[in-house]
Length: 160
Image (cartoon, rainbow, N blue to C red; front, side):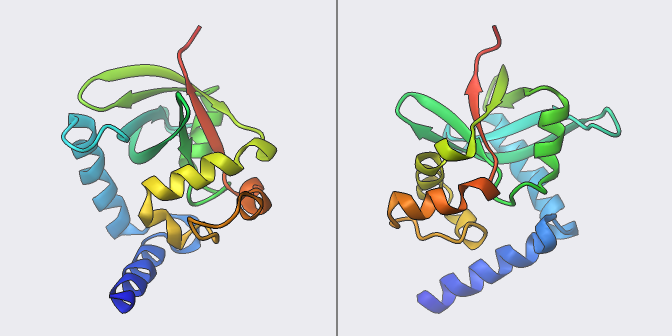
C-alpha cells in the first residue's frame, strides 16, 4: 500500500514538475474543472474562474477549498509561482466559484503568519497536495508555520 501511495505522489509531482502543470495535467484539470463546476463532486471541490492577466480570457481550474471555523480558503499547493495566483492578484481578488451554481467572490490574501492552520486543514482535505507541501498532515502547527510563506492562501469573502 505504501509503495502505491509513493508512486501516486511521484506521478502527481511529475504532473506539476517545476511548479507548472504539464500537458497531461492541463487536460486533467480541464476535465476536473468541468466536473467540479457541475456540482457533482463534494462541495469543497470547486472550479475557480479568473481572468488571465495576459490574455484577458477566462481561465478555469479545479481547486480544493479548506474550511477553518466558518471561513473558506483556497491554497496554492504549487506555491508562489502558480499561474492562478498571479491571475487572482492581477484581478484584485475578483473570481467566480462554480459548484453547481456561480458565486462571485473576493479572494483576500492571508498573511504568511496566519496561514499555518489553513495549510493543516487543507492537507486533510487535499491528499494530492501532500506531494507539494513538505509537511505531514499530522505535524504540529509550528511545522506548518515554518513553510507557510511559500504557499499563498486566500480567504473567500463576499464582495462588498
